[in-house]
Image (tube, one colour):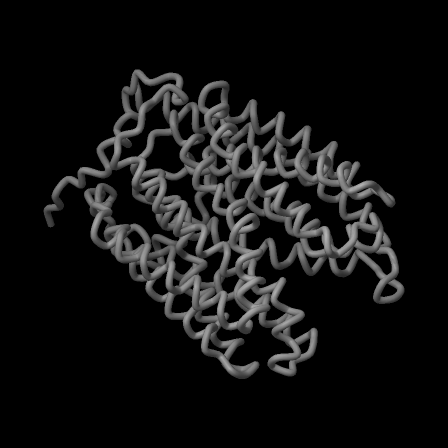
Length: 432
């Protein structure tokens, strides 16, 4: 079967014999800028849909008359269904045009979000979150596969830096807007807004994104299940999957109890939490592209090490905080999130360089699934460690979670060094 050459995949040929050594000086074409912007906006809607549910708990639980355990299941249902879907889709990910795959799963995500926006009972909301997770959990892996297909490693740090802004943007813009809509209308409104934005972005992608089919030129002689097994058991890829487990573990162990720790241990007034997250998110949005550019200019692993050292220091300081002025908490939060962003951007760029072109979709799908499941397990483990005597009492053993997080960061330094060397060796061989 003959496949036509996809124009949007041509920039990726820079990896083979490229003379671009400093990716920070590369000038993106208008089409490349469009691809980066649209993938970032897609990530924004997916991340926002995942993040907005937790802050809505105070409104949603009495609205549906559900318990805290039921609400916890609604939140976790997305993560586990996303993990399962990512694994199931991985075997087929390299057999179709990535644009069609992206549109298929994004359409399902929008339908699931609409389902959330019209749910009127606990059972319908639970099923809506499961459906949304099944489709939404695959979008990130497809997006990263497209980035890897289109953009050379020399510029991938800058691309990841912009796309990762979705997390900060959802914190700065999405959550406050979502809470405002939920307060002034009801908890359904944020989901309907996300679905409306998603439908608009989906139409633009359908009309403007070119087919991403270069990987189809590489023939696949095995069936989908065999391809999935080969990718999952590849000795080189397993190192990348292992790094993803530890990268997800650290962040998800700290995150579930961060707000409770700030209120009960650091004595930050609840009314000032939006201010804290808004300022932190603004800095994260500004720092994302800057960190991506630095990664391309000075080396991704080198910046990963610096980000890890900063993160480890700030995690220890953060988890040992006592009552503190709000300006100090904001400063520590900014430094912590800067270190975490640095690790996310550089590790995403390096790990994306591990798979061969024929395995990218499967690799990214498995990697995304591992990330989702690892995050869910880490959150549960954190809940077993952290203790609270009464509802408003200070948290106990949160510092232990911090030490475990630092330990995972130390291990990832060695794992990412191996991955960095493998990617460098692969690029060197491609240029010979």
